[in-house]
Image (cartoon, rainbow, N blue to C red; front, side, top):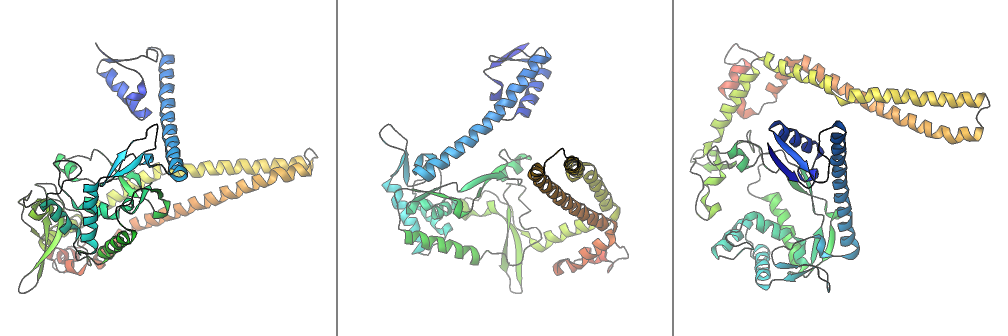
Length: 439
């Protein structure tokens, strides 16, 4: 039998539930887990003690994270220390804290000159972010990491970083769950390794720290203004969205497809084009040889497939019935409503007991006035929550009525379809204009 040892169970996983699953999986394959700071898991008591240690360790980890977060915010807002950032952007060197001085930013003159030139090209020169990126790569300007190339996202982040005007900010982003796939995950055919993303927090929540400035505040304000204007009036701005916009990707290389157009002598033709086939994005070397796809032809095929599925109302009705049945059985509002009714009955009974005790001279008027307002407030709060849950059940009832009138729902869908797809043969056939078959 194989044996492994570790100092403590919490080193296996950051969550107690995952630790239990991992321990059971090891035991299923004949691997014995030996812990130096815990008894051997042979008796039920030892297993219970080991489980308590895992839960306490998970709680302690959460407390450490919270204390660290509070400590960083205090050092940032009250002391103005750069150590909370733990790194420096391009143009600076991060100097760690020592016995003689706190952590600080030191300016790297060669990189600082690149930053000033980027801002000058964007504000005074009028170049786009893509043009600046190509210029940096053509001039072979070194990046922070050797062997890498400049990207548009790097230049865009540089133009938005307030540290270059002398105000480094802490707490700009927050971690949130991300459900979308990326290119590498699509190529592997699975989920992304990191299912999280950094979302920007509101500007008023940022905490500023004074650092050496590389550009003037006026220059940074001009760049910020132009970023807003370009985002609003960019030529790529989609006035009329497409059916598959943001939903299709290249099967060959995994990059997303974007909408582009070309104009013939008669009309304007739209295409879906792979990002990897644009050589200008990758130093003149395209990463994909996939040809563009006609937008109208691809969307007609997809729309015809959607209509084919909607031609069978029983399919949609079965799926709706299944989801409604699951919602009835697992809806948390139902259990919460039962708990609220029990709590409300308990509060009302307590109020009745207080009144009975006062009427029988077992409770003074001062004591009644002291204890009754809290019960009244609790009763009002429970009533408000019960009414809120009743409103949720009313919405669910409306959804049930929608499911019962499926034919009306399909009729509204046909009426609200984009005029572009009403001209397709698949739509006319499904709507009964070219065939007798109806929804």
